[in-house]
Each structure stands twice: as structure tokens, then as C-alpha cells.
Image (cartoon, rainbow, N blue to C red; front, side, top):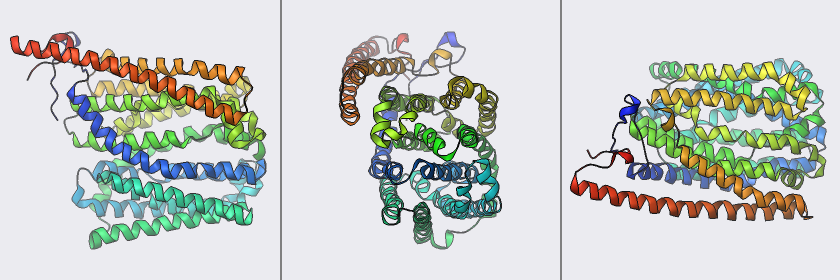
Length: 524
């Protein structure tokens, strides 16, 4: 892909970028594959999002708190035990597709060993773990947690390989089917046995099914090529271990606040806090799908020049277009959402969720993904250590000052500060001046329209006497109409400006052979 540039003399070699046909091309390269992945995940996540909502109605808060602690442990160990091997496939497979089977086999075996080590640790220290989380009942489920973790670790490579090989349609179908089946394996045991143990057994059976699917699919496609390669394994480890350290610190930092709360309060109270930290599947779905596509395409651009910059800016803009309004909307309808999904039993979760909804915002910059493309794993480690240190040092004061909401607030503040450091590092790697580090004007427009759309929603939720579920539906409709309507009008205005600018450029081409300096581009 060619991009026409004119260096900005005032910026000592730093380039000025403005959207043109290159940006349009990058938009298509990101949007089409990401849209496929998002569509596939929407189908499944709509169903799987209901798991926690259903179980919250089946079980008392103390039992539901145990369920949340089970998956807190799983989520933490899942992030730590990957050792960067699964994510390393995004780096190696696009660069050496002929060795895909060996890379996958190396990752699969490493993940299996890591999972079994976690299983052993969970079993040996089951009583100590339960005591630390002030929940003796948790000890009875540690073996199931270890088995579920091991199988899920091994099956992580399935969708990653598909995305790395640009089989986006196949990945989308797999995402959808996997999430739907997972929901059935979780919810059906709850309906049939009203037992938390039955739910965990169903979850483990689902994970084992995924592992079987991975092995069969890879073997059928690659046959005897699907084997361990120690030379490639060492290359993967050299790349993955620094990244694994960075991710490990990030995982601990992200979950640290929940462990602090779990250690200070009983399981029922932890359930309230965990509901306040509600994971909106749409966020992970959009973020993961878009960023994974961006990483693969950036890896293909070995020069990391103007095309990479345009790709990063386009990714930020696409993420912000969806994530910013989502964050603002969740903030203003927090009460209606929590009460509708989890009943008034969890009304105390509302202020926690209001702060939690703002933690979506730093993710729009895709800092970790870009730094991984540049193999800046050591810098990622430093960033995450900084964030963890801030959380550990300040969480006590934040809890004293703001209650349980303070545990989320300190996480938000530390994440924002470290994200700024990451953006600065990327700008340095790409030789960008401050004014061209981010697509400032596009971001400003998105934030402005998201804020304006919130005004009628605030009036609707505060001044009307509608039932929470009705207010939630009406608020969603109003917010969508205002935000997307104003975005459409802004797009029309931008298109008129673009056409006018292109007309001036064509006129300049016919007279001087140059594009005006104001456009930031020159004819080459």
C-alpha cells in the first residue's frame, strides 16, 4: 500500500499524517475482518453473557460469590500460565506460515504443562487459598478449577491460528458455536441440579471438548507436520517470556483489587463487588477482534512506516467510535442496568459499576498490542510494574476514602497514567510529534457527541418514573439515535470537506504538480 507524504519541516523529520486514500484502505483492511470476528462473537456472547445473570437468580449471594471467586482464580491463572506462548502465534505465524503446525504444537504442549502445574498447585494449597479469600467452601472446587484451566489453556490456540492465517470467517463461526455451547454446559447443570459443583463439572466438560476439537482440527490439516520443534520452541520462548512477564504483571494488577476486597469481606459482599465489576462482553469482543486484526497487518509491514501509523490511527478511531459512547452510556444508566440484570438484591453494586464503566476508555489506544508488534515486551513489563506499584501503594487509602468503589477508582487512575506513558513510547518509535501522535480531532468529535447524547438519557432516567427495564430500553434507543445521528451528520460534513480538498489538490496537480503543504502530502 502506498502513502504519499510530505515531511513537516518544523518537526525535525517527524511526519504529518492526514487521512486520504491510504486511511480509507486501512479502514477496509481493519473493518472487514474485524466485522466478521465481531459478528461471530456477538452470536455467542449474547448467550454466554446470560450465564452470570441466570446463576445470580439460582444461587444466594454467598454461593454466587463463591462462583465469582472460582472464576477470579481461573482468570488470573489463565493470564499467567499462558507464558505468552498462545499470543506468540500472532507474531510468528504471519511471518512463517509454513511452520504453523510446529508453532502450534509447541504452544499446545507448553500450555498443557503450565496448566497441569497450576492444577497441582491449586490442589496442594487449596485450604490456604480458601482461607486467604475468606471462603472455606472454595477449597472443595480447586481440582475442578485446575482441570478447567488446563483444558482452556490448551484450546486457546484454536481461534488464534485461524486469525493469524486470515481465516476470519472460520474464526467467526468457531467463536459463535463455542460460546453457545459453553452457555449450555454452564446453565443446563444449574437448571437440572441447582448445584454449583454441577456447574463447574459442566464447564470442565466443555473445556475438554474444545481441546479435542483443537487436536483433531490441527492434525487433519497438517498431519505429521504437527510436532514439536525445539529450535522454533526456543525462538517462541525468547519472544514470549518477556511478554509473559509483562502480561503476568498486568493480570495481577487488573485483578489485585478483587483479591483485596475478597480478603477483607465475606463471599456475599464480594458478590456485590464482583457484580459492580461486570464484564461487558461487547467490550472484549470489539477490542479483541479489532486489535488482533491490526496486529497481524502491522506484522506484515516490516518497514513500520506511514502505513503502520495510518493503521494505528484508524484502529484508535474505530475503537473510540464504539467504546467511548458505550462507556458514557453505561455510566449514566448504571442503576437501571444492574437492577434489571441482577435484581434489586445487587443495588449496592451501582456506584462500583459507574466507576468500572470508565475503565473501558484507556483500551481504545491499543497500546499493548502496538508495543507487542514492535517486540517492546520489556517496556510493557516496566509499564505494568508501574501500574501494579501504584495500585498496591494507594488501594488502602482509596478504600478508606471511597469505600469499595475506591478499589476500582485506583485501578482506573493507574491505568490512565500508564496508558499515557505507552502512547508516548509508541509516538517515539514511530517518530511522531505530539500533535500527530493521535487522531486528536476525530477523538474530540467522538467524545463530544457521546457527551451530548448522554444529556437526554440523564433526564429520562432521573426525572421519569419508568420501571428500570423500560427506562433501560428507552435510554438505549434515545442514546443510539442521538449519538449515531450526530455521527452521521458529522460524517457528511467531513466528506464534503474531503471532496473540496481533493478538488483543490487536483487543481494544484494540473498547475504545479504539487499538493498544497496544508494537506500534509506531496505527489510522489
